[in-house]
Length: 468
Image (cartoon, rainbow, N blue to C red; front, side):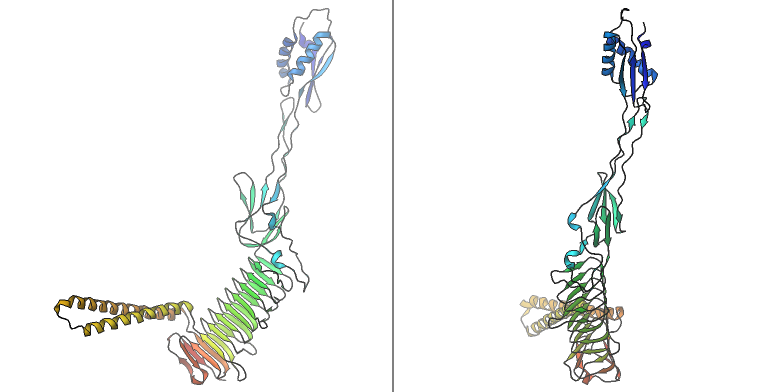
């Protein structure tokens, strides 16, 4: 008999399993095959009818052996499909948990907050977070051999600012990197916010430590006493700066004034600086300084022009040093202390000029020494070789002196050609206790002629006297 006639193969509705049903057979008829032969016969037969995946040969052999033993009807699941395995969702992990900040978005006016601990600065190139991408999953298969596609994992969603860029790593992960120096406002798996402009929505008062901002800063209030503020970019203070130390790498704009008590206020700007008034303060700027009202008992140092104008345009008991011009409406007062205005002060120029002057003086001494030796030396011809050496030394000193003088002249010419002529302009009135310095020459207002322009020792310095 044919054993295939005694079996029927059926699939489940989802084709994820197949069963073999062996019908009853009369054991009076001798069986001419063994269980192994039956298994070897049914395996290719299953492929013929479409069962090509997940065939369990062990279960098939056991079912056929039991059927041969008693001849009873038997049903067994002989093939199993595989369900697909969904992919894992991607996830974002913070690379530096210590960078997570709890900085408040809004503040209460007048409330003191430890901004030195709340502001988190991040350098360019810092890896803020890492994203592990989702997996694609594992596909499944029906017993008929058809593939069941897997559902891939979801890509995590993260809101990030424009300064946070993606960088693909060799291991396939994605790193979120800071593109520039800035202030980190948020670092969570859902949000990475890095900005170059930070706003403090109230007065800034933090005596506990230095407040450092790697970017631009706007203070909507004032900088209160005993606060140390360092800003890499631009600084704008809507109020005033009182008895504090403030330093910025860019421009500083103060709507109010700069003032302090006995300890004073120190303000340093890498660029320009502007304020309404200055009192008991020391101000340094790499660019121009513009004061819109008055300067009292302060020191101003600028590489550019210093201008004090406005309703009063007054400067009293102060010292002003400018690389360019000084423009003042009223200088000094009969009831106040001395006032010093120094214009055309170029530190680089004067350092180089001082070095050339020292070299000229040394060369001149060598020249004089050589000349005196030659004049006194009346030795016989046996010592003429020494005389020749002294004469050659004198000649070399003379030539070097001429070279240094030409260098000095070229330095003056370069300065005159590269910069406008520095002037001290008094638009309204100046008092006798005011000292004017242009280059190395210092004169008081008593010795200045009121005849327009008075040129002093250096050709690049002029003094403008405008009497009221």
